[in-house]
Image (cartoon, rainbow, N blue to C red; front, side):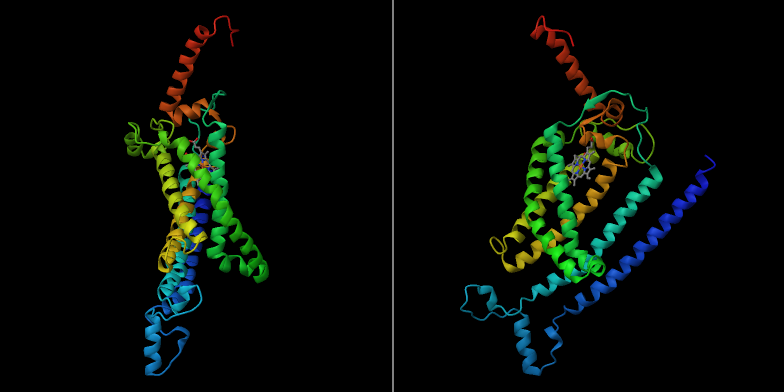
Amino acid sequence: MSEQSVPRRRIKTLVLAVLFGLFAALTAITAYVELAPAIAQTEGRVPGGTLGTTSDAELWRQVRRGVTGTVSIPDQKAATLVQSEGDNWRAWRNGPIYTVGAAAFWTIFLVVFGFYMLRGKVRIQHGKSGRTILRFNGVERFAHWLAAGSFIVLAVTGVNMLYGKHLLMPVIGKEAFAALTELGKLTHNYVGFAFMLGLVMIFVLWVKDNFWDRYDWGWIKKGGGLLFETEHPRAGKFNFGQKTVFWMVIGGGLVLSGTGLNLLFPFQWATLSQMQWLQAIHGTASQVMCMLMIAHIYIGSIGMEDAIHSMTSGRVDENWAREHHAAWFDEVKAKEAEARRQAPAAAPGAPAE
Ligand code: HEM
């Protein structure tokens, strides 16, 4: 152990403790502020705190149970004065979705930070070879960045819709927040389509490499070789962890797209109470996706040496490829050798490379 490592570890432990304290405090505050009024809205209380007489109470009870009258305007939904499920929906949105979501954000940041503290950057064990190999072609990289870029825009504008009132509004003021959020909402509506296109492209391009193969069990047993600095388990183009990311992105993306389209075209395909469910599912699924993506972005950028090159230039160092995706590397090399063997036969007299 080097002389510097003890104080460095102390600093790391201190930073971790402070972050954990912050996380606990913020979770408790958000839970108190948000959950209390939401709970007060349920349990069949009279809206607006009207005291009323017995007959008033009975009247309100009827209204509260969703009694429907008649209206002459085209919007028949207006015939229901109070749609009580709306209170439940609001309690969910301002309650668990908000508070559990906030806690989950902190947790994932801490998990990633803790992983970094324990494991550090995942390095190329044998160092760089200086030779590179093509991992993703231009179309694959375009599809990835289309999905990734649009997802990040959707995540930022979406998080603002849920948390901005408490996080951003106190900082920039009501007027600026209103203007920004309106713009954000419009952006959210349109960018959703770019995300869907990226999702379809990713699916079509990579689905063939994301089925279970004979290396996956070995990868699971070794925990992907991520936790300890051991040899990385053998893997094809994608390892089991990446396959999990792939299927979660596809599944989560489908849920987000389906519910999102319903929110974009309200009441086209869903009734009022279905709309409320769809919104709650959209809010929950988007936060699960955000958690996943925070971990993914970490490991795809600063968490693993050289990984980012596969999505920038598309080429990675051969030692990286050999260590992380040995079966895929051997396959590519075998194909290259085969192509070289066949090349002179196909084009006799062609100049040598
Ligand atoms: C700044 C943000 C992001 C960075 C830096 C990043 C980086 C990367 C890298 C380097 C890879 C290739 C890993 C390899 O060579 O094996 C990758 C793969 C992938 N990315 Fe991203 N990514 C980002 C955001 C996203 C987002 C937002 C999505 C989806 C909404 C996404 C979906 C995927 C999928 C499905 C794969 C293939 C499976 C996997 O490698 O995990 N990425 N990403």
